[in-house]
Image 1 (cartoon, rainbow, N blue to C red):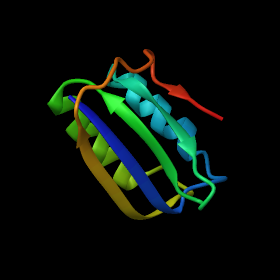
Image 2: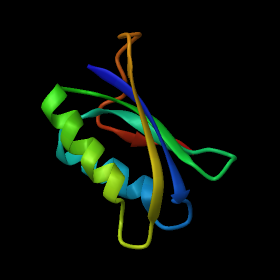
Image 3: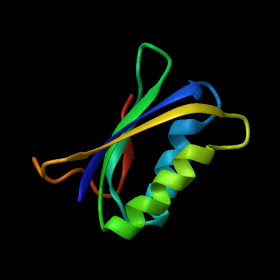
Image 4: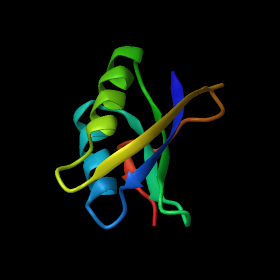
Length: 90
């Protein structure tokens, strides 16, 4: 299963991308994460449904200094394989 996500709130400058990558790698997910110009963090992830559900819950919590206001989550049609291991795009 492949998903796209966008996290809004105080999520840039607090280690959110590193947090997301570490959590995704621990769950053996493929994908990427990056900062958006509007201050949100976005990405795509691919893996088993149960692992993605755990990833979603962890993204909603965020790292200690983040304040997640909103998490958008959307299933995607499989377009192509995402990078593995999960990576941070700059």
